[in-house]
Image (cartoon, rainbow, N blue to C red; front, side, top):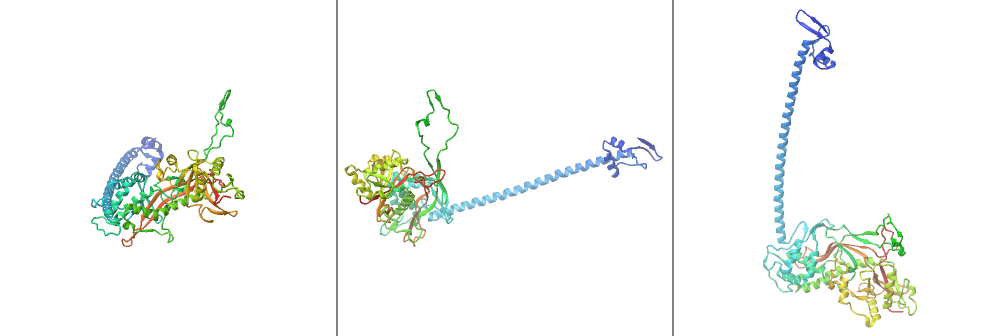
Amino acid sequence: MKTSASQADNRIEVGPDVLAFALGISSRQVQNLAEKGIAKRTESGAYDLIESVRGYVSFSKSDRKAKAGTYEAAKLAEKQAKAELEAALQKERAEKDALKSQLDTARLAEKVLNDIGRMQGKTENVSVPNVNRVITSKADAPQGALKDWFNIFDDCSKVIKVRANGSQYVTQDNRQLNQFVKENKAAVIKDLESWAKANGMLRGSSTISKDSATVGGDIQGGFLSVLSSIMRTNNRQGFIFWQFANTVIDFGKGLGDNIKIPRAAYLPAPNAPEDRLLSSAGAYTRIDSGNQNLSTGVVTAQLSEWGLGRNSQYPPVTLVSFVTAYSMIELLSILNRNLMRDYYAWEDLQIRSLWTGTTRVVYNDKNAVTTSISDVATTGDDGTLSRKFLASLYGYMKEQQIPPFAGNKYGLVVNSTALTQLKISYDTLWHAATPGELQALTEFLNPVLISPGETDKLTGYCGDFENFMIFETNAYGVGGSGAPGVQTESSKVTHTSFAFGADTIGRGIGTEMEVRFDDDTDFGRATRTIWRSEEGFVQMDVDGAGDSSAVPQQLRVIKVNTLKTAI
């Protein structure tokens, strides 16, 4: 360190390292301070220690004040921004509350309009049964069992579905309604008739007068909904194939959706008793470390919309009978003949057509089963459906390992001619179906649509013979060659019946059959009516020939072709 004195004042001159040490900074920072004029240089190039310290102290104070000012400014800016944000949030809350108030007002207005629409029998967005049970005279309101029906209807789970044209409609789970109608059908029909007459229907050709807020057109939606539930519980006289489909109902599914129906094949059987021996005297076998996959699968039934009215060949049914019929009994009879028979015939055809794909065909050759029509050629070969041939057919199906129904029974659908031949073959041993046989049949035959003990719903059942449940149909295998189930083989006209095991056809239902009416009533003169449903049908196990899928079909349906006259 070098010191010197001048005439003007005393100075202490130091080098940059000494000044850096005194200020507690680096030599580089000393140089920066000198460039800013804070650290004072002398003429000799050294630093004036006293002036440099004073300058540095002054600079440090100013710098701290500047930093303090910046911090205060930052805090003030933050406070201001927070206030602005809070104001924006308050504004947004106010706008949200205003929108909610408008929405609540709109919903209330919509409810009022819908209530008015229900009084008038109208809806704009979705199709629902329009029944005014609020503003109406007591005489016009549903009573008794019908009132109970509407209460159950109101409580049913409902879902909105979309039609192919994009319009919406409401459907519901009908199981409780169907069960209620089953148990109270007579009362429901009686109360429905009274309600209909109070609203201008079922008056024959007589003049009617009516004073109430409900008009005839208003109640038809509810009227048809009740009719639909009655129709779904009716006996399908003459149609039998609906009883043989494994049915799954999923009312939440609609047009284009898939309903999955499980199916399973049997595991491979052992070839010898020892294949299942685990331990014996002096021998112990560890359980194998591998796994045997179950031969299970799922068949998928895609839902389509079905119904009457596709084209001019099958137009809707016009029912002036809603007014001109005299009673519910008469109207139900008219509906069964003109509308529901069409649904039953379509349903029958859908399931039957999936059976006709089987490639296994058998014939009666001297009471033995043959798969060739050429074996039925000489006198005495028979070719008809007989008692002994039926016993042989049972053995043949067992040999084919076709799974039977409960009670070790197979099914046999026969045409009218074949049934007559069988009755003649049994002679006095033939008997009608017993109550016990009918009861047993309801325990396992299509339990989704037939409840245990509901013997009145069984159709075409003729009885049990040779471990076959025999059903009669006149919709297949009758008529001349070329008719469904009637063909010419080797110059012989044969008539087809079906022998079958369990689990052959799957059926998925999204919307059960319902009666629908046209909004256009031709100025109140007539009602155009159709039936519609959303269903899908699929083979489960009919014939495994050529099936290479992961879980191939098994043979479970056999065509039994017989002659009209024995050879």
